[in-house]
Image 1 (cartoon, rainbow, N blue to C red):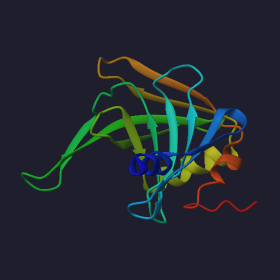
Image 2 (image 1 turned 30 degrees about the vertical axis):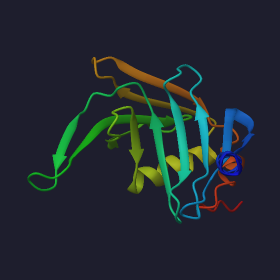
Image 3 (image 1 turned 180 degrees about the vertical axis):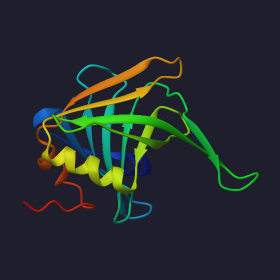
Amino acid sequence: MKQVVVAIFALAVLSVGFAGGWNFVERHDDARDKDTSYVLLRSENSEDGNVVVRCDGGDWLEMYVTTAELHISRTEQKQPDSATFWYAATTWQFDSEAAVTELLSVAVSKDAVFFSGDALGHFLAGLVDGAKLEVQAMGVAGNQLTYNFDVTGGTDALRNLSCISINF
């Protein structure tokens, strides 16, 4: 019985809400002694769409948008007989800024796109400074997937993540 109670406490998380619908979920991986907290923002117009920014258990973060199943725009294999990487053309726009379209890596489940490099920096800046966000990608059936987000309050929510620093 003692082990069951300990396991339940280890899985307990703290969730805090912020303006714009942001939620901060504090998590800690006790086995690796790593912070795996994240912030989540749900789409205003679809149950499939979420913006997720999370600590990877180190000093870095992962940022992705969940979607319905995506159409794969390009595949890439680094070496013969190695893993195949999938990419989907994804467009995002903060407020009245120019829309940005890039090929983003796709999750194995084909229902999320991951931001990296310059795209990650641009997207993170928009989450901090923006008010509205629209994300578009093509669904597996050739349909246009569009997700709208109210990113107000992003700064306050993101400040809770130990893996990033927002100073202002």
